[in-house]
Image 1: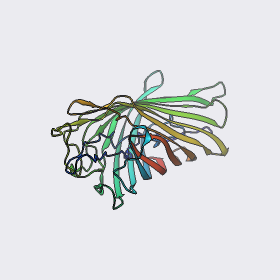
Image 2: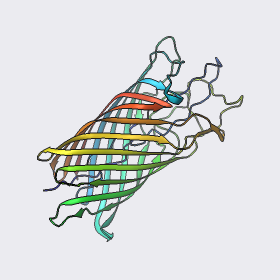
Image 3: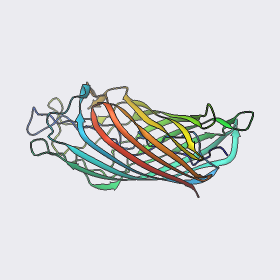
Image 4: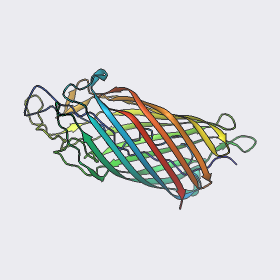
Length: 332
């Protein structure tokens, strides 16, 4: 029997971003503008285009990220930091639904709701800036409608292609303190549409992708443990630039219902950040994450994923030396 599984989600694991520290002033810093916490970098992987049987499903994710490098433009280490370390543990609960009734052309209407809990733990060497984390709390909720399509099958009834379109909104519900440098929440809205698809070119082989676009609205309370200054003026608001990225996988079924392969993501900011409406040069984020992964189809209504990532080609954000995630999905 070919794979059917519960719909993967728009992952809301916190985006570890570089908080810039200016050495030109003892009392004030120029803010660094960060992409939102609730974006899906590698959270979804193998067989991403599938959604399983119609109805309600629950997905649980547990992810651990460990960053020891905070990189600026062109991948240079921030000289204001001494031996920085930031670990993030994220527990996500997602509820998704799509209707058994088709609206035509094999398309089914549905929705998704993701609620994250985020735990931050930052440590910084005595010779550098002492950044502050905001502990453990609710992250930004992600919700939105989706359009799930029935699989395209070949002459033998084997699924060869399946896809989904979604329009997610990241809602600033997360714990946030404007006097802390790292927060579970982002304190601004974002719109994050995506297209997820799976291609099965031959029996036991699978290739999946999820293409994202991100638009961020303004943050009227930028966070920093030090006073903020921009060109000698108070910082009233910031706005993270637009971004696009892809999650991608390729796997092979090595045992019945067990597939192993490569999972990855490539994120690139496509417009500059802004402070008080002014463009911030050399502010665009970039990161490539790659690693091995596994998928186990436990049953038609249950699936298990295991993913590991190491990041490279990093600019203007923290570099995760190691990320590991487990994910479990089941029908309700």
